[in-house]
Length: 264
Image 1 (cartoon, rainbow, N blue to C red):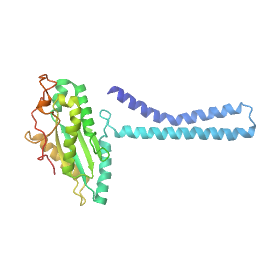
Image 2 (image 1 turned 120 degrees about the vertical axis):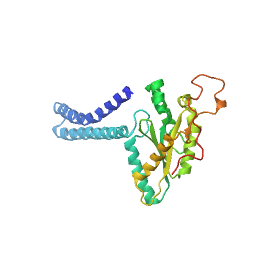
Image 3 (image 1 turned 30 degrees about the horizontal axis):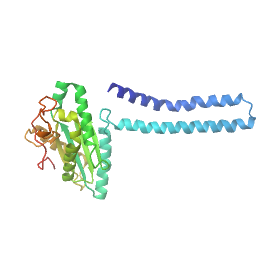
Image 4 (image 1 turned 180 degrees about the horizontal axis):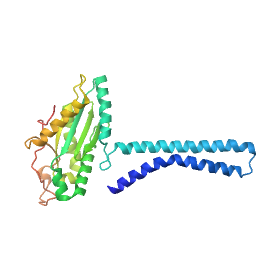
């Protein structure tokens, strides 16, 4: 974690200093030309050419690193998913598109159940590993080009599904847990379950705040009600084999999600 933070700070410093390279190096090249033996009329042309080349390289480097910096600002350092800032930027854009074109748009809010227990019993390094594995699970589905995944903070995540109604969003979430979650050993080790809420954009001028609040409210309703169905990445019992160690057996009793999932 500290290494990632250090690399991020170093990238930011590089962006700040690139402009100085052009200002420092350009006079040096001009001075070298002055002490040479080229005809006087050639000095100005060559100086301008070198200066133009240096400025071009400098602009290219600055643009490249501004893109890198913008990516850093929009990305969660731990999981590699987009962050909360990027979520609201994309959500605003997609809601405007849905209003204009009448396309379907769904939003999933997710929260890891008993995440504090994992941190308390196994340490924050294990908790970080759980979050990274969950990010891989959410972003490996078949709809990668149409869905955008975000870490909103802590153990809360969001998935924005373009062109999907709430039923299709639920199916995509189930498929990710079934096909991708089972390939994440750390999720299996803790028998991870997630509380979630799914909202489909209603159109007719519904505000972004209302859209988000519906998904958020449904997620927390599931979180508070122990009887609610949850998204589960627990393997079936027969796939655990005969190993009775803590690493092979689930530590929670939440049931897998079914058609009674929370949607609004």
